[in-house]
Amino acid sequence: MRILHTADIHLGQIIYQNYERRDEHDHYFKQLKKWCLQYQPDALVVSGDLFDIQQPSAATKACFNQYFAEIHRSCPSMKIIMTAGNHDSASRIQADHVIWDMAQTVLIGNSPAYDAQEGWEQKYIIKLPTGYVVALPYMAGDRQEQWQHLLHCVETDNIAHLPVVMMAHTAVAGLDLKGHDFEIGTLKTLSIDQLGEGYDYLALGHIHKPQTIGHQEDAMTEEVTYPAPVVRYSGSALHVSCDESYPHTVSLVDIDKHGGLVHIKQLRIDQLRHFYILPEDQDCYTDAEAAIADIKQWAETHRSGYIRLKMDYQVALPSNFNQMVYDVIDAYHDEIRYNPKLIWIGKPTAQEGDSNRPKIEIAELQQMKDPMHFIAQTIDNYPGLDLEELREAFEEVKLEMKRKDEN
Image 1 (cartoon, rainbow, N blue to C red):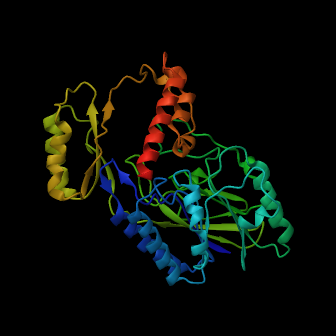
Image 2 (tube, rainbow, N blue to C red):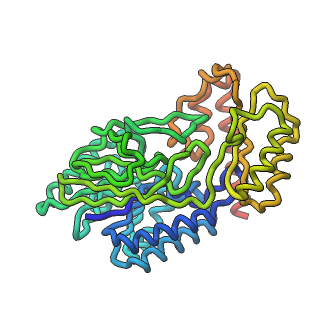
Image 3 (cartoon, rainbow, N blue to C red):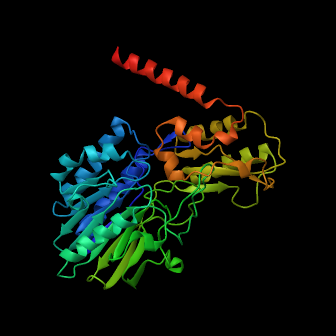
């Protein structure tokens, strides 16, 4: 069985609240289409975070349709299996599944209900001529029994000992979080045991660094072979921060048989724009004029890329410093893109209030639809706040918005 494994595409992302990444996604999908044609996998699996936000624009949805329709036309016999991640709206992903069924494409948005009706398993098990794919979207809570039940169903049917792939969008113990900087929220991890037994390859999404759990020493090795089972993050399609200094890849996976060997070949994604931390030749900038002069020189040499600056914590920057940077890069027509969040060098490590940060799982934050849910969980940080009064105010706002929609 051969699959291409990718994840965390984040279509529609507007990075640093300023820059669209349509051309970067165009560049990525050209490569993905080329690899589908070149390697002829049985399935292309995309393990969550298809979109960057739960309500993508019409233009972003059109791009999604165009990208995957082109891949299907190029490889009509290849199955495409996509699941929702924590950035996605499960119901919106699920709503389109009937149309995509006609294009050899399976979309799975909604997770199994805790009290699922008899026969629910059929929706999540895709049987191919060469093997099985158990496709699960992002799921909150403890779902160990459901994961294991699905794998037992496959085991009962798999008399030919075909390979078994399982898809999930979650964080597992032993992962390398490099590149993920959570200013608000925490990351809850599951043990490998909680995901059940019986798969040969667990195709994960959620973490941006390509890696095989338990084999971090091989993270950047182009080709490796392991005995099943193998647990792997393909990594994200694009770099999303300067901290993601590692290559990003798509995983080409070959499995000889159930319980056999898993061969992984990393296909390196060529990034249209790279991320840079300036200055490149010293610890940090010690005054604003030197920083602007260096940015000008860097821009003339590189002419493209994302930049973020390291600044001495003692420097008193002029109030218009960010605008000074934008004035320098404006001539490059968005080819050079600036992250205005500076990296302060020498900043005291213990900041007052850090210990009071809300301990909410980051994926839970991204799925929240009601601001009252967040406020209720962090009420201790707002002494004197009247929760009921605030709830009534929100209800008034909702009613007013509903009246405007009706009119």
